[in-house]
Length: 394
Ligand code: ADP
Ligand code: MG
Image (cartoon, rainbow, N blue to C red):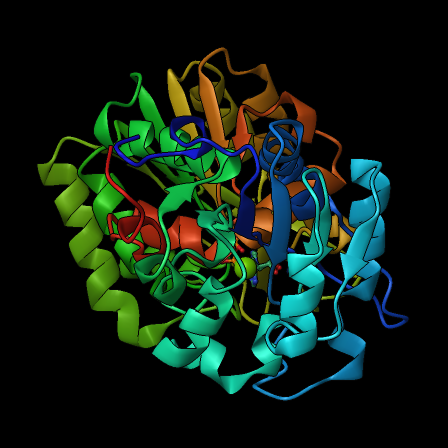
């Protein structure tokens, strides 16, 4: 990675302002349902603290849209963070202001403070320079470890870096290391597994990966637009009619570029999207009228699994079916399982794909699961992310 990291700076005695991504999912009662993003920040925070720095952590949570929303306070996150760090965390009632400055100034080496939800202030998302400067006044050094928010140029992810020495945290470094290796020097054969809901969300990713991958495997809702583009009947499956020409173009592009581009040969259909739906497996070129394609079929799963297991590198973005419902989770499970059996490097990007692999219990056997949904997509599209670009070059 050509950016400086916390390894390149001296931390002892410094107050370090660390942008973390503690935007964790909460249930209706406000309980944290997945703490992975908090756990993933620990290497950076512990390294700084063990080196004698005081840490001022800051994050957004949810979408409060510039106002204080009681249910989006960071207190539960701070309490969990304290437990995971095994140190007290001073959970502050705001992210700027005199009281915040005083409490931050009172931190001694090894001390930790957590600022309140940054997006309670509208200036955060506006990347307001005065607000960024107020945040910057809370530290001597800025560390961005929030890969999941790096595609946004906000005050805490971009603006603040103009007022302090700015380096990457260890999670940011790990994310960039895996994702850039994939884009710059992937191990071959390089297989991209792309699914999820819509083609329109993934056009940039498909385009970019078509120029890099040896094989592209298509599943999920987007598969049906490709099947339709081939002239097949797709029943009541998800179709983006305005993307049919694009789908044809991508199929041709793949052929010209010598990329093996596989779409499903069989699919699981049902007449409703429900847990108690009665399912059938049908050939992908003959989906009966009125039936909805909701997962890749067993023959497709077997074929994709075979390709994935023998890959040198695999990147997976987007579930193969409506995995949230058990009758349609088989294809996603098969792909996830094949990834764990692959001897090459395995990378998962995308919020729902990461959730699926976690939920199915395969997470520990994947080399890298990106903590950024939108950020990993933009990275895979080949875009520069503002929260990374702004950090000091090596
Ligand atoms: P990611 O977050 O990993 O990038 P997406 O957000 O693009 O993935 O897509 C995930 C969603 O796609 C899931 O909620 C899943 O239910 C849905 N999906 C998958 N297959 C289908 C399908 N055949 N029809 C409709 N929706 C689908
Ligand atoms: Mg998603």
